Length: 318
Image (cartoon, rainbow, N blue to C red; front, side, top):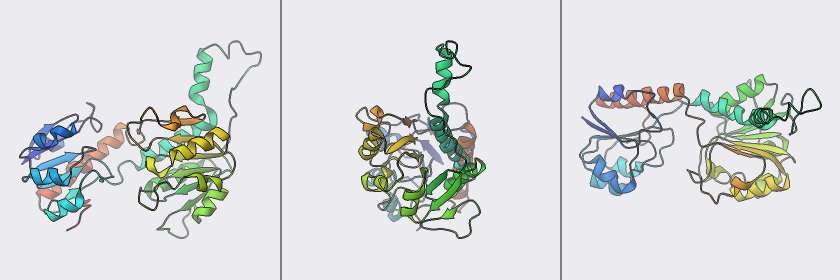
């Protein structure tokens, strides 16, 4: 069984092992694959493992030996799953591996906004505390979260993990999800309008669909409290970025903490780059070593199941 990994670097920049895949076949790993080399690098491989390298219909037609595609992520829109289904090629993904990491990171973004820890640490090194006439100083308002309302849009595993941590901080949590479960002990379910109107902090944890794309826009921001904080560690296109930038500039939105943007890597003309009180991190919420090891283990288990004649985490059932 010939296995090719097209873009392994983000999953394993050198601190993990590919040993699990090596035990299942003849393995070739590329750190990254440019679009013009995808077909060449797949060649006559039976197993294709990809993270963000696209597998299009034309690629599938040009590589007839493909028997299985494994995606090293939860999202799998980079694969033409419908075409793969027609060709009898199963496509699997990696669900649930990053729940703890992303929930933790979301709250880290919020705490940075509330306390500006990075800024104040640098200010100390720059001598501002040393020269302060008082025993302490701060440059930004400091925010206590207890008794404030966190509104979560999308209440799957990551949304629930975020809610658990927020609950421990004393926050009231309300949540909106198309598949709500009544009597949840950590959140009260609410309509989308209630989330927008009642929340001091709004955190996005919903998938990107035609219904959720641009869910944060000029109109929805207009329904929010003045001074609201917006967090997004889900998908960049959930937010209309120019509308958020405008709201940050005028103060309607106090601050935003974003681990994702509409086009990644971010482009220099993104309006959020020059916006005050906007904290942008480079899509790393998922990336602690523990989380990536979990991802690796699930990816190997997915392939091992396929080789043994069963399928798990299939996304294009046929």
